[in-house]
Length: 429
Image (tube, rainbow, N blue to C red; front, side, top):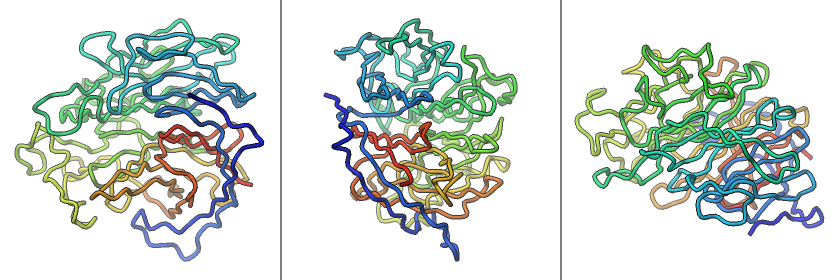
């Protein structure tokens, strides 16, 4: 059951900022003064909440991975629009949409011309064809925000991980990507995908797994894309592991991604068109031999007692030995993997010294049996996007759970989507 807390029952939390060592960077001599912030729970009772997208008036589209698409109106009313297979209580149901593992109804994006075309986009796993794939759905929202219609699947061939009984890593739906954002600069829709624990996908010029795609509203590749030779024209960058964070830098509109690491080295990377992320888990690369399941992404198997420096020598996220021209990350999370699953740039004078900085949500993946992460880091990227000048962690002791999604609202507040079912508004006082 979903419900919205009334304004009179909103809980206000005071946020302080602690100096961050999580990025492995030396603390600068003078750190930026963090703004005085407060957090308000605006939605709760959701199930595996994943993403939100806004209209200028604050209308909020919400996805729940195993439930479907809803919309929260400025009045606080929540309407259930499109449900997944077997889910009741929605205005419409799509019996081909389903969830498994990391896959389901993931990202949502609003067309820049929504006022005239009423169009939104959703990323979801679908059983509509064999084999199962991830798809990007184009939907029309009714004038009264009570339903969606006119579904068109503008991308039908994003790989989805089927369970292979002989594969040693993960289950169905693993490494699924799923974030979507429109660039305020070029107006195209950017879509992130995962490698499915399939070593062939990231460097493949034709398969869409392990990529960032750039398309128009009909699913066609942007004319300025530079895919690998002979590659799919929808590919913007390739050589990725599992990108679930995507944001555009204010002023330049350069796309920046947050990417999960293999037990080490979550990365933040500023993208360049045609760039290679440098992830290549195929056997017999960089001196490796055969690997379990033909996937070397965890090889050699790290043990829980290793120090970060020791873990970092294995299967690099960005393999500069194989790909010297690969896009270099600006931040590597101190050799740890803690689930950097979402990102948004902070904008507005109220953010003070944090105005223009990148907020990154980490989901607290357990390592060695001990949960870690569960935080938002605020990163000051260098002007060239190749390094981080300062990293500060928001201290949010009263917000528990995994930061699945971060989105900047039209009110310049940061909205944090918690996997456990709440959405928080975080803003300067």
